[in-house]
Image (cartoon, rainbow, N blue to C red):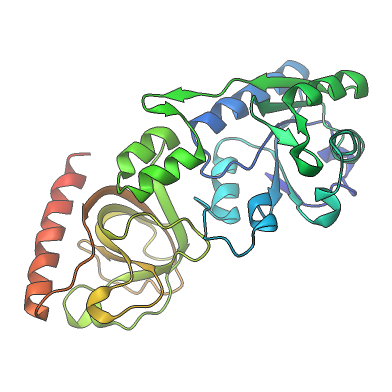
Length: 312
């Protein structure tokens, strides 16, 4: 997969793609439907499959001080899109110049002249251009005029209603990772390198791999049964574990993070890239009267997590 970040300079080999347009936060089953339609349109003409998205997310650009909301960072999104067979990722810089383009200017300057796209697929709720003034029907009209195809994909309905990144965030905030997974089509994962911690877990018999959740939507704080993928290095592989997500009230933590205890594992994971999948919410964060009580609860949490994960 090639990543293109400047629509004003695109090689001939990167033009002519069939793309799905959107933010693709989480790459959920609704996104997969849009991507599959772009794939099918490209197959009919021999065009490579592409994704047109924006970085930073427009919501981050217009409200930089708002609470974190993203389900995944740009690297995790790119990795997942590549696994889906995307050949061109147009990850366009969202800045003042792009935000100021009218709907017509966006269609002409970015889609036709800049990227030279052959076909685009958008959701029925797609809006674009300055002030979100353009809609999917407008894009279809521009395509007919400017020479690129446009497909409007209907929004996907799940068991609990419309599938959306907002609904997935709500499920995670409610401590329901299985509901989130049903909409995602995969477990919700937190990806990133293992960072240095205070090594308290090691002294308690529960050494943990610590990861930052900075910039991501925080799921409900508490303890989870998790699946762990070590993505590279000497310990590369898949493991089971239990993780604490939050502020560590027993130790007066100030910045939320994810601390994962990997079952039946020994080794150094500092700086190793991890992907931790939230499977089940076990309990909220709490404080204990003593370290012995805390350790007893961790014993119980791990026993419960083992049972849950063994049944998958």
